[in-house]
Image 1: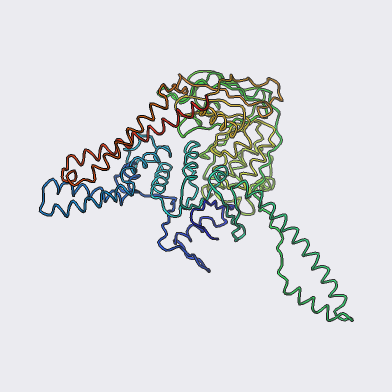
Image 2: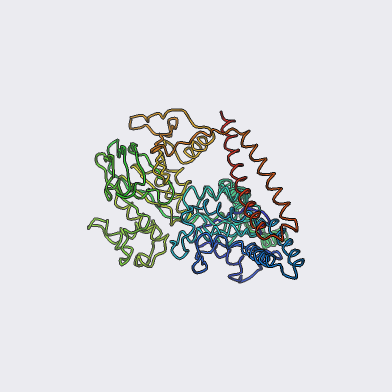
Length: 621
């Protein structure tokens, strides 16, 4: 494979195909058994490590700014020179000359913008201002990984190597990352199981399969189409060649000792030299997640009315209202800490509602898949763990046959749960849930530990499931396949319920930002067969206490343009003054001008954003 400058590449393949090994070869952490890894001279690689380390005692803000170590060194030297100028040392001319050089270099390399840039990326990845002074040692593992990603993005290497960058991000942060990467000028290679992310962030896909790398132009969806076209063409070529070989071998058998022996020998040599076309390798089993037959529940499975969830000292989400019918799937999305799992636990009766009502329908049997997989007993062998939900009459042979559908074969069934990988534990938890034959599945991040083929197998099973599903997920591709309703929690107490899949909801939200929708929500039909996808999708918006409502901006674009012109003019004046020798000699004035430059530049950025927002609102009006 070859990665060219500026290419945006997705590296895909099932677990164990060698994706992470390729990253280790590229970053020189491992050496190849044969062949070469060639890097351009002076190439700067940036690898997102699984375990990141920060300087002891450093804060979130300091760790992010550490990506600009070179600029910080320049800034430090400039401050030292300012002190020497204030002391009126004998070598003032030398000091002034050096200061002028550093100042121009600092400005040229973005010295006045790097702090704002770092803070923008921190916020994009979910670090709000109140967390910036936290020491890195106090961060969770997921937060440390996010901070490591922020530091890597700020460093802007020539090639970014991102191994599962979305693992610890909520949907809002993933969407921010997609936008960031789409404008990233240098190359990057991404390993990810998030197919929606690969679709939006990549323009080329490299597939690792059976020890080989195949390159496809386009995003993940284009790769799936092109792969099938290639496989069909390869199979046709293989079938045609096999037919030719069969006919040729028959000719050789019949004529090798006859009058046409010369021709037979010639064709035999031709066959020996023939480059054989391989048959298409069928995908390895991804697990058989087909769900067992279930008892039919009532038409209305779950009704939630004006529910408020959270804790006595903290409300997480309020005014949640919806009805879930048999055969439908509710997808729950929102930032980390917005109350998704709390809502699910309240629905299951594990936590008390703070307000409102929840009622289950008739003949409902609920199965719960926890994100932490805490329903698994580490002390048990796999087969004994499945027996916990099996009738006493079931034989070991039946349990082994069922576990084989989830890729636990042979002596694997005697492994202890504590020795399993995350993906294996995920498969075992799903096996238990499916074996229990419930008619309502409550799933908390069910795809987290699965590779792409396993996710696709699960999606097909859930699509065919006769019962009802409630699922928390950050996997937008998964939500598009299975969800018929979306419940979005914003982390500030607001909740929105939408009839439709994730993409429909996302497109509606984007339209809301461009021009607020005045249309009133249309209630879903009351019949059993009514599905949101079969009707016109309408938003059911719940803005709590007016938090979801945007204040109308009274300022017009003309007044903002006037302020922009004034700010740009002032920046030019300050820049000119900073280059004057008399200013450089006056340390107090120099510091004041530097501070004013930073403040004016920050204000200018705000004005640009405000102007774009007002212009968009004016255009849509």
